[in-house]
Length: 162
Image (tube, rainbow, N blue to C red; front, side, top):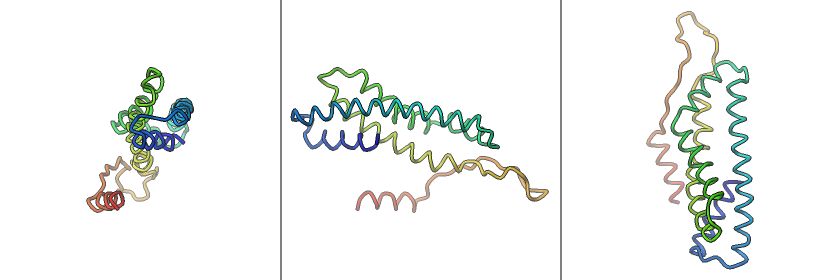
């Protein structure tokens, strides 16, 4: 729902070039209030997700959570760009400029949503969940670093450009 609200702000902002008719302005003001509540709910669930992962008792999951919470893609991308900046824009904007600022906040939020989805896939596969050695001379599991290959980047760009 947050992604959809961000997209609505972006589409209407560019369609009307920030000169909204009264009925659209009324709808976007109500949507801004709903988006603010949804972002507060997202803050709660992000905290809940990290606490349950850290204290959940799953072997080695706490190490992964420590690594995730200390990574810049989580702190800057997911938390700052995806949640806190749009939340602050919606909360502290003056009534006259709230909708224009909400469009820019939605653009920033969409970048944060990308990092949320990226981290959802990337961070869950950082540490192999093999808790026991199966051979005597096997190395202990450790963190795996990943960066998309040229082919993966090219396929993503091709999908965007087509």
